Amino acid sequence: MFNFTVISSNIRFNNPADGVHSWDGRRVILANALNAYRPDVIGTQEGWEPQLRDFQELLDGLEIIDSNREWIDDRMYPSLYYRPDIFELINSGDIWLSETPYIAASKSFGSAFPRLCTWAILKAKENGKHYFFVNAHLDHLESDTRKEQIKVLISEIEKVRADYPIILTGDFNESPFEKVRKVLDESDLNLTDPWLDLGHEECESHHSFKGFREDGSRIDWILHSKDTLKCEGIHLHKESSEGIYPSDHFPVCATLSAK
Figure 1 (tube, rainbow, N blue to C red):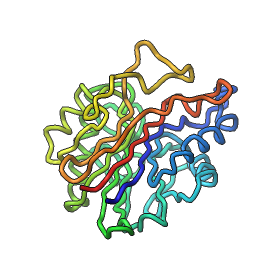
Figure 2: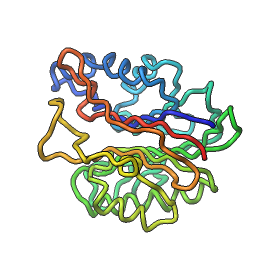
Figure 3: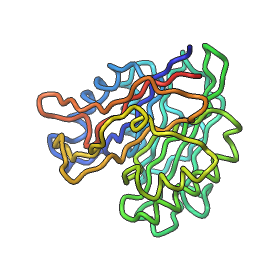
Figure 4: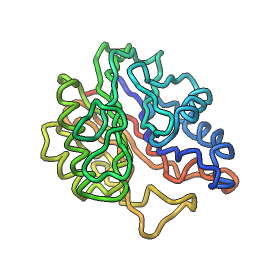
């Protein structure tokens, strides 16, 4: 059976105003935390290009997927990193979550910032099968905006994914009981939430570097195809290092197996 480990992690953009929690102070802490799981694919949210390339240098054996990306200096990018000894990169791309999804930095639906998802088709070297990875970061202000953004994501990935199993990671900026998940459930993607499938209690995943948030919810998800993949385990990485958390979001770590 082919097993692989996936992590979704909002790494928090490089903001000097974060003080002791700034990127320079926690970059190694974050990388060490993720490397400990020996992930095969990581989906990150936030991050400028220099920050994302710096992060790659700290990750053990993973490479960023950006061969079809148009980098823009003042934009943050959700990104995918993969382990080339486990997967072969077949194709990849970015989709801006707007009415013009292939115009870089475009935005619609009242989004505060241009938002996008990134995707990759990876071929597992162990079994020769293809897997479709998608990583997204939705608007942080308006639920109706997120609803329209996820519709764009669904529409566009349906054009390129073929019938490959899907792994969707991201910061969706709302709980899995609101509009985004409802739209996903009404689509033909047939995704399931392993956090719920395995009976975990709901909790916050964004904690503002405090390790807890009383009014928080689980806004960081890993979803996967229901019929072709099985989750062997999933949890949030909540540990800190001498009081410094890897990010202001808890990384989500899951081990998946091909049915």
